[in-house]
Length: 232
Image (tube, rainbow, N blue to C red; front, side, top):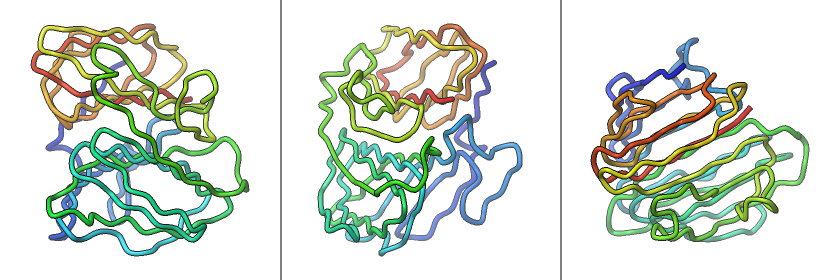
């Protein structure tokens, strides 16, 4: 089953400093048919204006993965962590027993990013945060695992969930296959570019919800950067 959810069908909120679209129910947006996909609970597509951002706020028992595709995001939290995640790179926060953090775009240009929330398998553990560079050239034509519940096997940032967050870049005309477990859930979004998923066409920022498939064949119609989550 492949359900293509066009960008225009997503919930849209524009707060001036933040222009965002919600793939699933979030904040004041509630849709009983879009409460998540497997253990993927949130996928927000954020455009954050220069010199603005999210002031300190708390989280608990959630794995939060931030994929930056332009600009940079600066993080600080109640554990004393501070860091800056640039375009193409990823940060992961395991909220665990509770953490307060702030995220600011301290740049002189807008920052765009995907923020994903994944329901953890284990609750009540110590919170943590980390960031890592993932050069786009290293994922040309192949899936690179960015965050994983089995990081020792995937050479990725750790999350406390039976899930993997992956990315790939394809040139127009190139294709890429993902061997899927039909019992699991996959969710695919392109940062840019049109592409086909098992013969179905999708555009940049559309959400492609997949389950019940043994393989996912992605063919780039245009140059495309893709982010894929595979979860229970």
